[in-house]
Amino acid sequence: MTNEQEAARLCELSWHKSSYSGSGGGNCVEVAHTAVTVHVRDSKEQCGPVLSVPSHQWAGFIRHLAGER
Image (cartoon, rainbow, N blue to C red; front, side):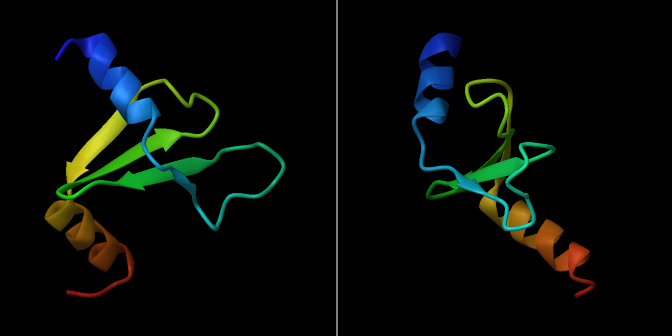
């Protein structure tokens, strides 16, 4: 798969805006889940760069943010 094909595939995922993002269009984060990966992007650049993280590592990150061990 070429970089362009991968970018198009990511752009077409079902993205969800953070509940902490306001409606003013400021700094917003969107997340899309696949079977084994969580993808994160800036909502202002919907077909721009995407951070992709394995689901188990994302879960650990969220637990860390919540102060859990």
